[in-house]
Image (cartoon, rainbow over all chains, first blue to last red; front, side, top):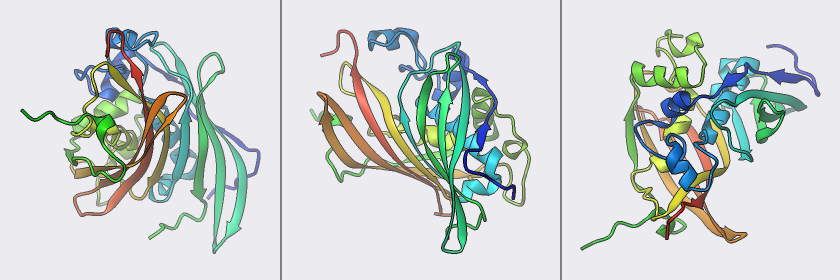
Length: 138
Length: 145
């Protein structure tokens, strides 16, 4: 397992969000604000917005890349969705390790996580936790 | 004539209709492509269990609007506000998953209605794969009542 330090910044690959990808994710031909421009505008939105779960999934991928496949057996995250993502946006998942703390025979990392668009605006923010010795919880 | 309840009419403690999902290679690939995440763990057997289901697929399929009981009232659209997720194991492509939802809370804040759902994804062996707590709200569509 790699060594992690408080303050360390981690970053995933940029993703280009397109209406096709939003539709693939949200189950087109199901029509909703994530797949249908007209329906989104009728809801007072500027156009179709990506499901917030897409950004959540980018952050899950980042956690797996940083902490390894074992994260899928114990990883946790909390997120607040703060800004819509639209077709054409480029979204980058990022994190900063806030704490590495031993306890109860294991070491846990607390990571501030967020996704940022091409304007540097945060679209989702939150916290993730990883157990660095990787043993499953049960 | 009976009218089906809309999602905003469910109360705290109500258990919503469950949903069963079989994850085929094709469905998994759709999420891998949508998320631009062609990692080999999602396409190639990692061990005896086979390729992983993309976690984004399980997150998406356990969103409250996927619930068969999630009928929106006329004129409203659903928006995510907050989410918590706890991953317990990798789902495997070819497997069947059961998704369940329960209403944990509902409240008004700044004249907007919020609902909090407990969502669980269980694999074909009855083991939990994912636990989530999703807070959702609604936006009003033009012309909606």
